[in-house]
Image 1 (cartoon, helix red, strand yellow):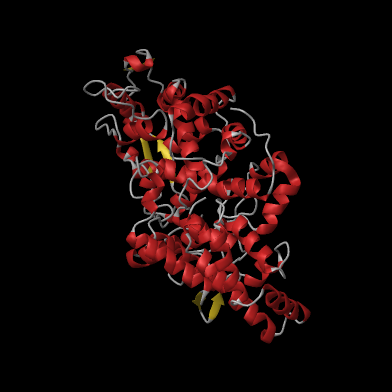
Image 2: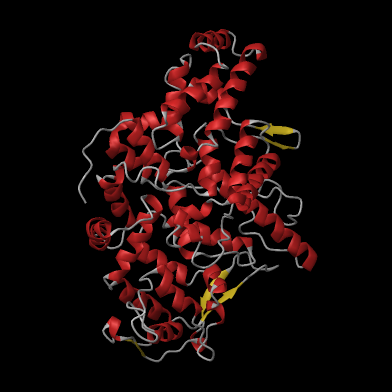
Length: 524
């Protein structure tokens, strides 16, 4: 890949941050410009820690309010057990939203979501297990992809999700073995013969199912065990030798108990198609869904070579991609339609709006955002299938699948909600930080400058001059530009007086309400 040597302006910085975060603020965009591309990438590629989810719902009957439940048992009573699980799932959903809202200038949350979509795992029936799984993805989010696959293979959530916990020498189950090849590593190529998918055959699926036998899960919703764990049971494992297909050179995986599946995964990652498959998914997630012959030859192949030469560490691949000339090409800017989470949190994070009330109120507000995204087609930690959300893989539409008559109306409803009444819980109201956004712009007293800044911040493509004029007329209420300058300066002279700040907020609400409905806002 050719390195990018072009201008480094707010437009390029905003493009990078829109793709690597759920929405940059104007300050973060300017900081990226000041720091330069290399320093910005160093910050983006540094894994950030996350807090633990806290109990807030009255249905939680073990962990105390404000304490984490991740190592708490469940009630022995069935009804109380179910109520506690429901409360913990609410807590988990709110926690996920809080993490996105507080992501700062970092790639961690975007990569965590990439891996959640990649493995497609849904709830195991125990919120502790889902938290453990998400923590595993977080730990490896910017790390070694081969190590991640090995860890996921025997994670309790995955074992339950794809029936690995019931996969035994007496009754082999091919679910995980099939998805490991088709979706998680090498990918399913064109079918060239019966049971032959270019990169593997049914023989490999069957052999894999035997290789992964013997793992069981313990502690689900247990009243005595504080963790959900996986354990290898030798008596349930098929310890015979397994012969792979000609795609793997007819190699033999010898029976070696708990080590056997690790050897098999090493063989899969030794296949040239595996790094290419993973890099195609990264490319579609971060750059463009359209992988042309040129992109395959000049971008995917290079990414795959970097992945292999760095022993499957993902960060060097991402660094090279985000430093490439291709990444900043104008043809790929605005090529991806925002996911529901990107649409919602670009409204919040770009305006620097953080939910900050008492634990119960904040959690309920975050859960409301979780529900809004679900209504727009995306429920975190609950993709529609093991393949993830269709917008990330289904040709030819890809991210266009985020937009239909139902989803588009909901996006507009959310835009209206965020720019009018906001979210109210327990007599507390959360709304966007309109004044904080405005005051942080380059020249808040200049109407043309305000509109220019907002368009750079929220829109990856140039806005038509007539649309900018319309937005400016909303800001000035149809009056000459100097009237806005006077209005803003009056507020600035007495910023705590609602007589002056309410009209300013009202004008900015009108602008954002319209901007959030424009097509340019819904792409990144």
